[in-house]
Amino acid sequence: MTATTTTAAPVIPDDAARLRDSVDFVREQDATTLLPLLLPGLDAVELRAVVDRCRFSHAALLVFPRAPQDLRALLAGCGLATDVPARPSVVVRDRLAARHRRTAAELDVQILRPPVTGTDGATRTVELFTLTVPPGSELTRVAEQERAREHEAHLAFEVATPDPLVLRGMCALFARHGARADGGGYNPHEDGTVFYFTAPAGAKAGYRRMELYAPGDHRDVLAAHLAEHRSRESAETLLRLMTGAWTTQALAVFAELRVPDAMDTEAGISAEALARSVGADPESLTTLLRYLAMLDVVASDRDGFRLTGLGALLRADGPESVRPLALMYGGPFYRSFGALGHTVRTGEAGFDHLFGENHFDHFARHPELADLFDRAMAAGARMFEPLTAHPVITAAAGRPEPATVVDVAGGNGALLGRLLTAHPGLHGVLLERPHVVEAARRSLEAAGCGERCTYRAGDFAAVPPGGDVYLLSRILHDWDDERCREILRHCARAMPAGADLLIVERVLPADDSVSLATAWDLHMRCNVGGRERRADHYGRLLADAGLVLVGSAPLPLEGSVLHARKAAAVPAPTRAAAYGRSAGVAVPGVTRPDS
Image 1 (cartoon, rainbow, N blue to C red):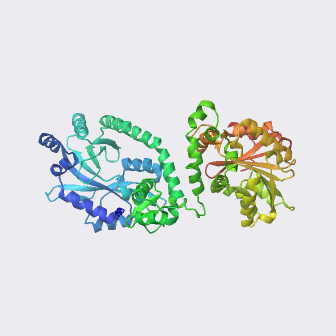
Image 2: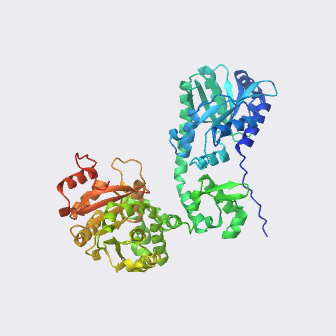
Image 3: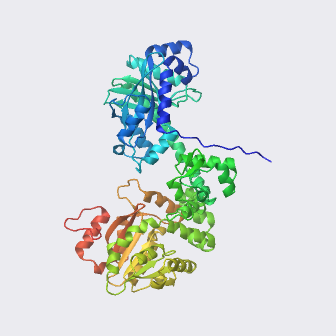
């Protein structure tokens, strides 16, 4: 029998314990004892040269008081002065913003330096960075991660005579002994320049980062230091990008084994207990959980691992579960994305190349995949939330006679069910492939909408006539332009003169700015053979079918809803306004219909 070892998760001390440890460290250390621990291999001559030019000035710590009075109590509890002035910390603020993808304006990071008298009689400080995080703040997760990982904890040495030659020489000496450039900056509030380093792998001081502090403006020397940091950081960034597939699979396996369902968001559980619960190897599961902790999907505490709010979205029974998406992107679409090269070379779908048929036909022949696909589509239903209040829907719901909403290729009825539930006066018609209709019927009946819904089995040529509102939700991006024109013409033929068409898609930005739609464009081309489009592109497709784009509005998850009507039903000024919006041109004097 193979013995297993229990792996305890690290205990994360609170701010008071962390600050007390820092005060004790500063009181007991000096440059002569610290530098050999930080830079193993430093010989006696080098040590003397460095000690003659700099002194150990402080240990740094980032804390997160709930309010200003909590900070004063924290200082007093550790025997530190409470009246030390605070100044803005530009360098740490910018590092936090970059690390957590926040704007600098959200992070009011202050710096203060309460004095500490060393056992040798020298006066040093604890450099305290503070970011106030009230209870319930959205910055709570930032605080948790920073306490666990101590990104800003470091030891600092102040250069006594910081001329450029001395600074360059000390940076070179640090690098020669394994320290790596790790950023820095000039702080105009105190007229000082900071050079950060990552300590060598063999450092024994208990700190991973070091700082050289030079009074005055030394941005000329800093520029070379930052260039070295950016060069190394670029390689590391590219490496993280290249290993993105590991993240996809880690999330998919986490969901497939139902690990989130065996975890709690409040209390931790050991990896060994989790492994027994889900039928996994304890050591391998521990490694997976450590990896997911880096992504904030789980967190470690004294009892093991607990689920974060982010990880809870992967539970099977959660109200906003995205587990089916994780299984889809980590399953069939993961395999077919490996054929992206074929798509780029030929323009053909990688899925078709790998499986020998398009994904609709493939899923129809594999019911378990068809069910997963429908559940994955429904998992993105948060995009639909504002549609219940869309002017077209509310106008239809307010008519004296019951209005009919036709959901073309409506999947399992998630969108139609949402609309019918919100507006009891509406009736629905769902058109889908035969093997999907029954699943939609069960879903809508479970939602209490079954009696107000009619089901039609068929393809796009069978769009039912006579509806008041027609829906095409995430349909057109599955197809090339010619097929889209065909689908839109089927809708136009079925639509009465006054009917409305709502199209839900991710729309590519006109200025090529960063957007989820750009990523989905690559996904659609490789896995489905479709594509995402800009608003003016949709406008041209609609025009070819005798329809006019008359409005658009944003949706969650970077979606959009486009509103179209038959050309004959749209006044000329509105058509002009619609053309201007879709082409990115301002049209004076015409308001947006859907605003």
